[in-house]
Image 1 (cartoon, each protein chain N blue to C red):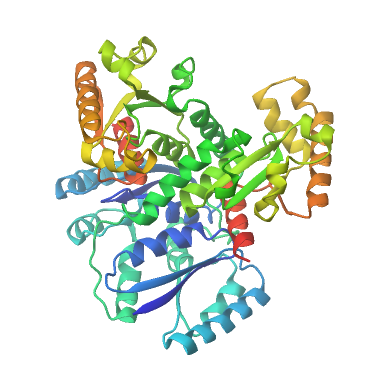
Image 2: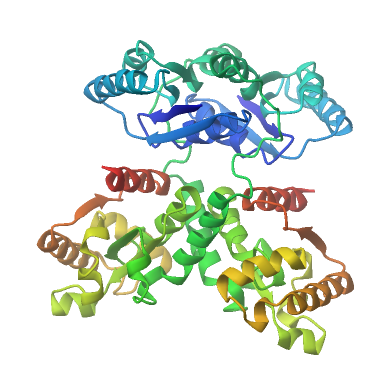
Length: 265
Length: 265
């Protein structure tokens, strides 16, 4: 069974997509063809979409499923009449929240992150993460909210970017290298920031898989090398007594959320 | 009026936060104190949270608002009994969707992006964006899904990272420099990929603000320099006849969504 799913919004549709994906994830055994459709912001576009619903129904025999976040009621009304399962996220919760707060919703175009101070700080954090990736420089570690340490390809870079993008955190990272292992200690610049350090560890077999994609057949991606590096890194984490996260089975969202939780605790 | 809001999940809570933020954005005149609480995954943690609800009510006189995505029904049941406005996103839609699909929801821990092929491709795209940022190399432009072109600080880097992280797109970028303006043409490596190019433009005054933060008082951040660069970049975009997006009043989410829409059209 294949069902067509739309993520629709008069704005970016990122919320509709996030919720929709999470929901679909709850249903096994159904294949979904997903269509992401932001900026459905005129009645004309809404009517065109209705026509598309009809065609999908004719071709597949089933009506499409629509996850929508529509601040604009007129467009929402049009889509709701279409031959689809229309799931509007704002409607239900808006009414309940409005009653709770005693304030009318303003139905402004649905962006969760506008151009605000908070937004500027996120952008600055993204640039910080870029500039302080991979131990490229260590003189700005004092500005960091958190510094991730781990062997090459343990998940440091994507996690730092996610921390910057979603949580506005200044996240730097430092890759432990054979040179560090030989010395058996972390660089002084890192030890000075010990309270900001979080170690990332990973199953050697998983690390090997990831490195294999990058440099197939190399010594760098051999299981032996992966085992040795992970073991030595773990010993260094233990010596410094820093928090450690295993990234093997985790997505970057999950690693980042756990780091935020650690920082807040 | 200040209201305390929790984003709660037995997993990362990223969906609860996305929806919650969008919803709160609809209510002006209320100040929200937001608390992000992922991994509430034991009954003990849930009971502790109930106690916190009581304290908040006692201190502020109002009950907290809770946005939750709980795949685990037992924990959800506990929180629902608390003194709070409990808004559970999965409940409502799960039932409707289950009826539509004729499949029972599996209530698996709510991650929208697991460790799948799709996930691997997102990670690879993030590394691609890092390696191909700021015109650092141009020999991999043939691998790009999209290449953003624009003057320094027009929004290229954060947008590329967002495109990689959320849409799994391989996004490269190239900064137009005084050298390019002097020659009056884009480098050959870019022109070869003309069909992948999207130009980013920005209001000179806004650009000045952004550059001012980076290098205050410099010629680089003078209004005159910003005006000249933006004008010359626009002329180059026109000459090549590529799509152009104005980033002045847009968040990276919005710029990225518009780019995806352009690519799909």
